[in-house]
Image (cartoon, rainbow, N blue to C red; front, top):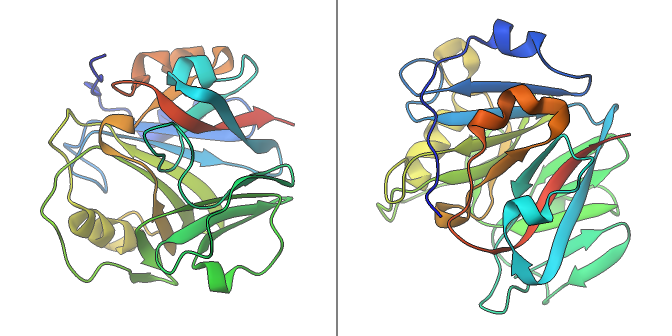
Length: 241
């Protein structure tokens, strides 16, 4: 399945006007704004929405995983060849899988209206939902990257910006887009200096797994659906409360 790229620039003020309560979407083609790659930015108000892990034994396409009531669904973290999550994945107090304590990477965790992105050791509460992944691109306001493998790819990122949870999807074609090092530099750079301004940011599974599907409540944004190239193990759905 061929992934779709964004082909249109939308100002944030116009984008926000069409949103239902609880989700703000901005789509940019990379010619302007804080990131020089086509991307979708999804800011989530956890006071009005809730986040849920969606999964299917044996994997499924992102549209198949997306609940009918979801405002938007994005791909989740890493998985193995049998479509089992790698690392720690917890939802509604249920452990989907936990393989020891990871020594690297970070965790996206939620409890009520509180969202956390950071190291497992710094997690301040027993989470209702948690997803471990790597690398931790931004940690406590500083870049978490010390080197680069030079691989360019589409990316899915969970970011904390101004205490809000934001999903950022770099929706480039396969084998193009940012390296992790370059992306971290843009994410940690303040908005005043032309960056995104993430105080923490975690890389989720990217490359051919990067994907976003908008629900019927966000039908105006469905032209920005970006589909993974195949099945994935799990996704993260933003649902109305």
